[in-house]
Image 1 (cartoon, rainbow, N blue to C red):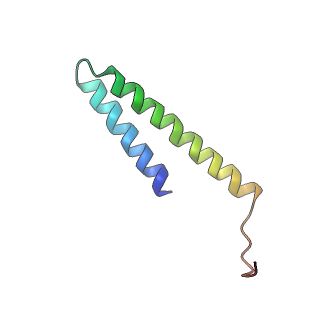
Image 2: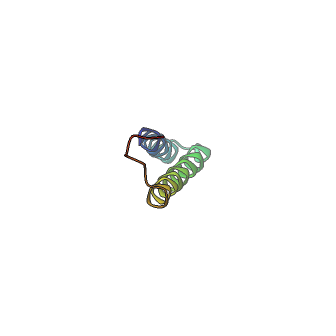
Image 3: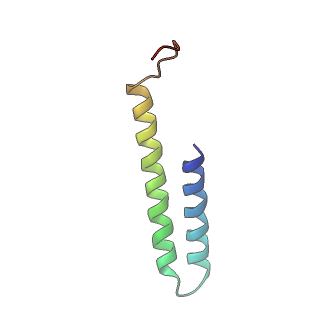
Length: 60
């Protein structure tokens, strides 16, 4: 979850900086790309958890 939050924060910051500063459109593009990657990561992680539940019995 920490990786998701880090990607989300970095993407949001880059989008904000890229939108505020003239001539920094590439930062906005990178920020949007990071936001998409973070959402894909979250979706993949949630799907993985529902199809592969953890073994909580304590045995290997």
